[in-house]
Each structure stands twice: as C-alpha cells, then as structure tokens.
Length: 134
Image 1 (cartoon, helix red, strand yellow):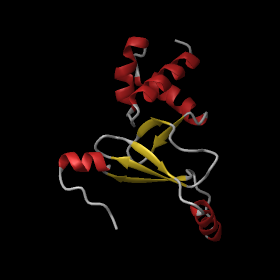
Image 2 (cartoon, one colour):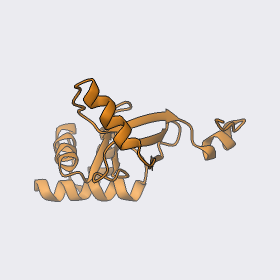
Image 3 (cartoon, helix red, strand yellow):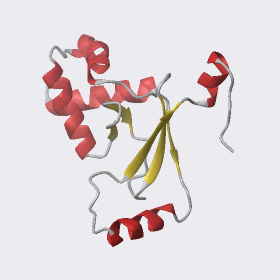
C-alpha cells in the first residue's frame, strides 16, 4: 500500500470513529485494508500529524481526527478518559494570556494546546453522579 493511501485510510477510520484511538486500535481497524505491522500505522500517523490532519493526544498516547483549530494557538482540549470523546474549547483572549506568560518565561512550547482529562457529562450521567464544576 502506498504511503498516501495508507494515510488516507487511517484518516477515514479516525473520522468515522469520531473518538481518540490508539495506534494499535487503528491497526486492528485497518487490517482489512492491508495494514499488518504497527510501524505502518505509526509512519502514516506521523505524516498525518505533520500535515495537521490529525492530532496526537500526548497524555494518553491517542490520535484523533483534528478537533483543534490550528490557526488559533493555545487551545484547551477536553478528553473523556472513558469514551475518548474530545472537544476543543475556545476561550476569548486565552491565547494572548498564555503567549505573554510564556514569553515572560522565555519558553518555547512544543505543543500549543492543553489537554484536560476527565469525564464528559454523558459518561458521568451513565456511571454515577454528574457534578459540574462551579
């Protein structure tokens, strides 16, 4: 399978699943399309990340069809640790505040998004007492 075809197939799987997935979960879903080894998947995922078509969630080592707006730096991504649903939260002026703070500390970030792990309201409702922060 050509690299471009491999990338396209993994992107389609991630878009169809609409949740964050590990490379090994992707490999299982992609086996019918000619994927046989983890390295095939990792190579394609790396290219998709570089093209900003998908996003790697570093805290959980998962990948998702991009929910982030790469034109806007310093976003917050909420990640449900139960169902793996990811959402982007846009906060007015948040990017400027973070950028100023990082510049003051002379720090150059590798990733311009903040991952917040927890449980979405849907999972909280199914598994217990949904409590919302106030």
